[in-house]
Length: 81
Picture (tube, rainbow, N blue to C red):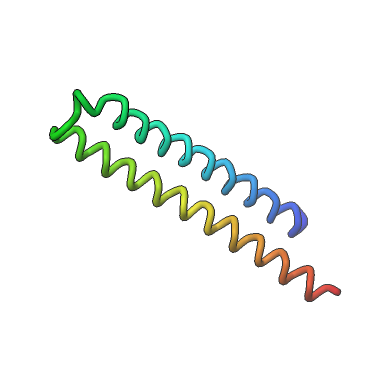
């Protein structure tokens, strides 16, 4: 596999991860908003809020990995010119 193909494979993987984490984040956010009347002040609400925070963190990490990969690709292109 060529380095460009390998990099593209990682980019696809990180984008897929970011999409999944964003979807999960939106799910938990909606769940907490929709069922606030039911969850308000319960242990379940605090657990779901922690899960939501984790999903947001995972989304940020995946996006950071995408940014790093893009920078790496730009640097490689500059070196080859």
